Length: 216
Image (cartoon, rainbow, N blue to C red; front, side):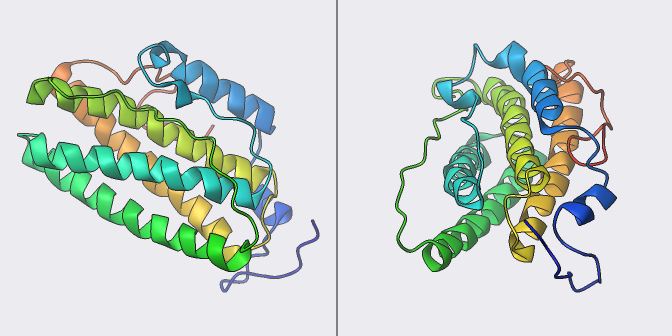
């Protein structure tokens, strides 16, 4: 695609802008790194842990909606069950933010792709917590949501690195996913270590090393 427009701060959009943001690794290398990182827990999680190839803005939005919805549903359950007030506040905020983003993505699909109605391929990633103690459910949530967030970051990175959109609002949304969910991963890793004495499953980078553009 040939992008000539600029964001409000004067930064050009498109592949040249993303190169300036530090997208240094080929997408295959990024995908392999993340695949190796999540491999230790794939046997414990749902069949949707891996996703099919994404090669358009439409597919990104189509798949990110159910991905967000699973996070909203799971976070809502934790907010009701957890005995830890900091985790309840964290999950309530996650559910609120991602619910708003779902509405935004649904509106984009209606406005931009009114003739398309494909069903998403997405399958659940999070393990069920019914019947678990509150402490055990919290641990399962933290372990699984870290992996869940990493998948969202990978999807957002693929969108940007693949140059699959020429809409500044979608680019900003993908960048926000990378930034926000990296920050939430860091917090969840801290809790996982403080409360359970374990590192997040498959974390090959070490705390403080972020997933996404310019952070390898």
